[in-house]
Amino acid sequence: PPRSSLLAARWASHDSVSVNEVRKGQVLFQGGEYWAVKDWQPAKQGRGAASYEVTYDELITGKRGGSHKFGSGTRVTLVVLDKNDCEVMYTQGEGSDKVVVIADVDFNEMEIPLTRFHGISPKELNE
Image (cartoon, rainbow, N blue to C red; front, side):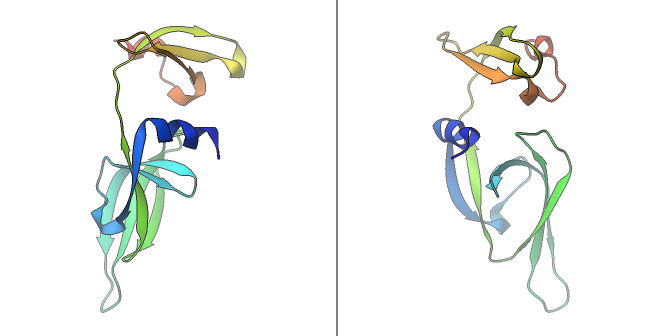
C-alpha cells in the first residue's frame, strides 16, 4: 500500500458511509486520494434517481477545486482524523528532499515533506 495510506491508518479511523451522509469539512478516502470536502450538493432531475456532487481539495497534492458526482446508493470511505497539537521544531534537507520536523507535547518527533505544506511557510505554522 502507498505510504500515505499506512500513515493515515495510524492516525485515523475509516468508516464506510452512504454519500448522502457526507458533509462539508469531512475527509473522504476515494480512489487512493484523501479529499477535504468543500461542498456537497444533492441534485435530482425529474423522476430520476438523486445524485450528489462533492467538491473537494485533494490533501496530499494540495490540488484545489476537484469535483465528483456520485449516485444516490454509493458508499464512500469517511476518514475520522485523530488530531494532535504539534510544534514545528526545525527544517532539514535540501531541495525536494527538505522536511519539516514537528514534535508533539511528549516530544515525539515526526518528519513531514515540505511539499505537504502547499506554499505555507513552516514559520507561519507556529504563529
